[in-house]
Image (cartoon, rainbow over all chains, first blue to last red; front, side, top):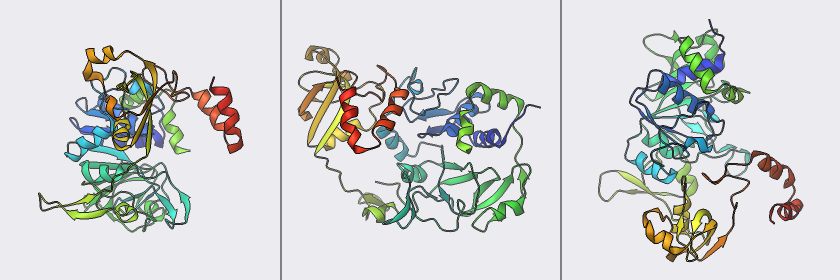
Length: 241
Length: 145
């Protein structure tokens, strides 16, 4: 058995959200999202089409550059889709999947990336949501992920609602939530945790899915080999520090 | 535009929600941003202000369309005849441009695909040296020949 950590386990859980044939978009500054797409493309979703933030289409450099705007992301692309044009394509409802995250995430899968505290006099000014308000409303499936799971992050009330919309899953180091009737429900847990542990670490109440909570299947040897090839320096682990 | 429902941004930014006159939905009317000046760096320009941008133009074109004064900095100045041979490659039309400045390596220490990549050590040096406003002039003296 090849060794893996929660980082790789989350990564394969994200990749498995990709369906073969999906049209996906890859945002800025996320090694985990780009790796998840590249992993899916190399395993179960060879017909996925990915537009990256540099404007490249279906460019999957191996190993992946640590920067999401490195020149390798447009080297060899048949077309450059500028960021402005990307939103035009999103407005037409073509995009299937987008990975995102939030500093705070609530029970409806809404996120805060704007401020902590009062908006006029914030304790912390966050980077802002960029185009995410539009992405969340126009991309069919938005999957959130977060490298930590605490009651402050998974909170009852956001300090600011930066984006809200079509979130279908939320993946954390403890579990996978699925959207069910507008609220997150616990679908799966990672090995070594259970429903009670997730409740303790979550700031909002949640139901469990009707079919019962299962365990996230471990990465296969093939998935781990592809990850090692795409990210030999393990840049993706930096996001968990 | 569509796509802002359910978040606090429209209220915080004063965006008005209006009925779409052509469909039974509601949309947001976003106030126009009207910059006085836009400065963008391009790969090739002629002296009149026609410009080619290789790689992704990002939001450069939206910025120059919105601004009242447009300044181009260019890696290379090339003859207008080159633009006339392949007008499809021209991304910025000369008639919106106020000034063209020949600035080779003008995007440095960031990148200008495909001419040069981000110079990471130089970005780190910049970050360290301009932490105090007083040092900015000194930094500029050493990087601008």
